Length: 223
Ligand SMILES: [Fe+2]
Ligand SMILES: [Fe+2]
Image (cartoon, rainbow, N blue to C red):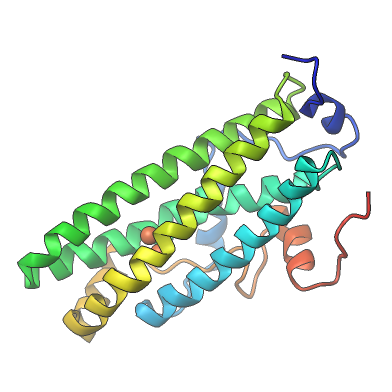
């Protein structure tokens, strides 16, 4: 397991990494303090997709460094995965599930889309959890092969991109056509409105470096 370049070597070069168990969900209390965001509709979903794609591009770029035997910015990757597996899985996907379930009540043929979206959300959750688990183990100085992280990162990125594409092609046009303003108000009431802790006006503590990198004020590592 440890004969090839592994994460222990890389982890030794890192600053103290963020350490939180998967079940901590501190984010929920943080976003409660940050207050409520603004409306939910298809345009809102699309803007979140755009943000997700930016993160996936960053993850891809960093992990491609690992594939070239260079050192990725693992804390940054971990922050991006944290945001995706906490905020996106818990809030973006939950709202989409609520929206498509409501739409399927109006238009029964959308039940198949609702099932597909639910299945995809579960797969994304599982694959993201596997990637998070690998990184978390590496940050705990447990042996993890670099190739495992690269493969898990690529699998996650590919799956999530396919999911975004599916929703933009098959789900969002239907939601835009089927759901009324009252429906969206119901979704808001059921799921609450959460201020985005990375792309929103108030950036969560653990996402500050990531936000700075996304804004271009922190250049990619030259290592
Ligand atoms: Fe989704
Ligand atoms: Fe989505």
